[in-house]
Image (cartoon, rainbow, N blue to C red; front, side):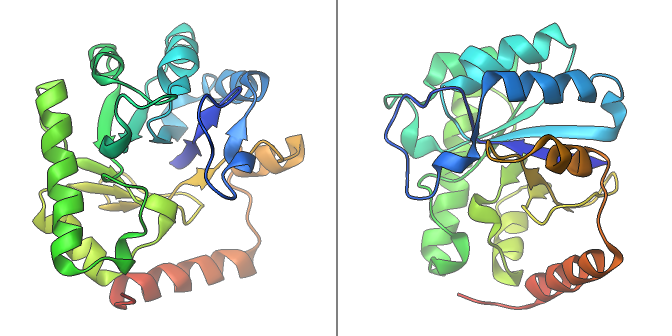
Length: 221
């Protein structure tokens, strides 16, 4: 299974964070990826981070047109802000069969938080989304893909059953930690094809595996 992650589609409707712009793709790029995924949907999981308005306005209708489902990881601190999803948008995504998950409250690297701050980030965001959607929120998208052993323990303690990282490559069904690859607007067609086909050199695959093991067992914060 290959995890594909998007941040924003089309023209941003808010001021972007530093270094965020490359992670926005055009509507045309997004459509091309969906068309390929729709040919073998059982091999992919599509996710979205941050809770941008384009999740509802662009991604949702395109996904429905292709008969696809996706996961949307929302920053609850941005709900209702300019260019971000509001509560009605989040409910619409959920009612359309999309999975809603937490991306935390603020766009913060979780390993840098204290134990109390991390607990607040994970539990409060989850509670807010459950109140909006009226269902259990059990999945989280890790901001910036940064995690360590303490973050993974905190996620489990907060009641999450699945955590999505940014380690790239594929994963197996049923795993708690699931890697994704973020698609960027500056990627070539060849780059995208390599991601969709999970092409990775043996050396890169080994380095990825070692890096993931290190992050699972080390505490960096």
